[in-house]
Image (cartoon, rainbow, N blue to C red; front, side, top):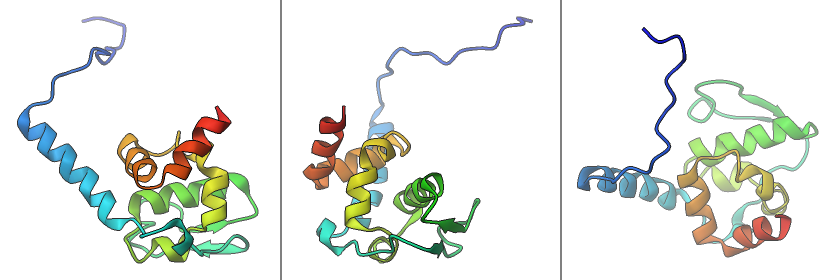
Length: 130
């Protein structure tokens, strides 16, 4: 028995047809949730925001928008767990654009790719901040 922990392989793996299909379905799940335009995102920028159980099922439900880490946590949770009708209620276009260069590093690759593909202004904000 080895005393050193096993490290995951860093070599890229070929995706089987089933894996590719699963990834496509996962991406489509997030694509269907997207707003038509970022201008639809008119959520709060101040105060305390309470998320409903279907989004806050695994952790914090109350976020103080005046605290940067909590604000970032709220956006990360909503991007991953929010449904189509939730996004305009809990996300704000200006705040999303401001947070995106850091937020994009905190969300999963699929979420990041779907949002940046749909809204090139997010990708350009990330490039400008780099």
